[in-house]
Image (tube, rainbow, N blue to C red):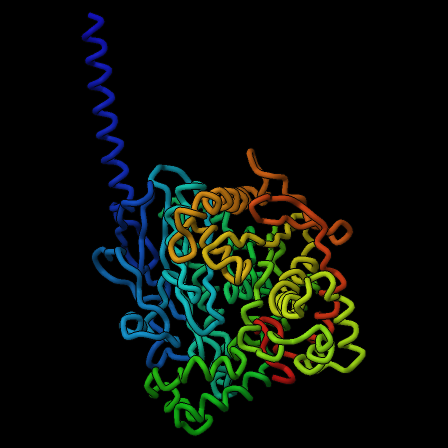
Length: 541
């Protein structure tokens, strides 16, 4: 009798296991209804997740829809097999292989969910790449944005998106503005982001996501985009939390600036200014130019203050209280811009006696301004070589301070604000390049691959990755990154400015950024377009 009971129990377990496996497979492949039609997903062989890749969230912005706000995707019949990424948006990329997967038909997003029932918090990733390259499948950094490991770790739904880049996303023109019903121009990539967020809000429940618990997160240009998405009224009520990684809240342009820069594009494509028919008929490749040209122009693309998407810079809108007030994490990496010095020989080779003079010539400062900057970044704090001080100054100027200023402004109105700095540099090249721009991204996504990680440093990176994924997903669930097993992350207030250091040892310390960032805040007013350029040359070579 006892044996029969054991046999029955074992048989029941087998039945339940088989049923559970079949259900798990169904949850991945069972068609999901979206506004435009049914989509079927796939089971991820590497993680306990399901994925849907290449879901169109808007109509292809080509032909007559080029340089227009995103339009709804026409409905399709049957079931769309969402098994592979959609094309990347038009961008400057090296290699024929990448160009085979690049087109104007690029407004796609990707979804990962746990392979279990339930309604889960949603995290929407906005990729970086300077508004000139990248995608929701693989960004400008070359790191993979596969959401499976983050989903498996934290029981969240992850969405990654494409948005229009380069001139296709950010060309401002008076004629384009005149034909737009909202008098908007030069922000098509940002309007794509807003449309994707609305699509997620309206459709994500079918993928196991909670539309009332949506976190946006992004890095570099994706970090700039976080501030834009917080500031624009187009997302009102659809975002519950935000995480900004190495971006900032000053990256936008006036229409006048945009119109002036558009002259380069008109000349490049060979159309007469104002000839919109020619603009829409020109071959897509003509708009791109070369990557070297773009960097020489200072990475010129950004959303515009057109009165519809934005009424001012995102920072000015946050300071005025005109933004989506939500819990906010923001931070940057210790050595964001150090690599810029490799290409600035006079700075790289500078001797201590030349420090102040080189600051003055490179940044276009007067003597008093250079002396003040040298006081804020004293050589004694950074070692005998001025390039270390230059690196910290340009890191602050380009990304750390624009990020800090956005969080400090939000902290005046929203209690749940958290500041971090990523210092981890135990990578193959870390001792030479430090905690460089974008190096936190693979830890957030759990994508620890060669060449940066190998058998010598992988375990340490995995440990910090688990900590960061814990903070990020806890925050997405509750608005508070803290949780069991994690070092305490204190809230940032303007009275008690603390930040979390993410390194081999995770600890909180005073931020020590207020005075330095006040200098750069004033500098931006006198030098529009400097912030976010990773050290664009302002003065001498």
